[in-house]
Image (tube, rainbow, N blue to C red; front, side):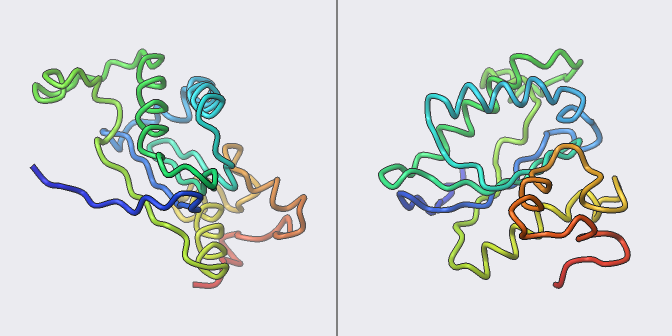
Length: 172
């Protein structure tokens, strides 16, 4: 079995990508209320500041700022994934290995994590999150995607309403 070394910096700011096991499904957006509740319940007990998030049909991206004395994002993801999977009634057929582990087969086992290094890194990941629905062809502009923190960032003056469209993508 592989051993994954994860950066566990207390108080760190992290970018995450979390995927469904079956990337052809639209489970996250079809069950957005269950996902919101899984986040709400988990983060009430184990707080983080969610700086940015986008939920697409088959995966999500987010930026979290952990509390200064806490580096346990794996616990949070385990709880969010489990709570969401309990609520989803899709006909997901888990593999034999998933059944042995007591998994429903909704999520990929792993997720991508990256600790944000500086302001430029933060800005790149913030843009990546908000441009993602356009990149995947779901909408023509970032403002059109309903499952995103984009509007919060427009209200803060970081983005304009027309930022991140097919005709004006963010810088690379």
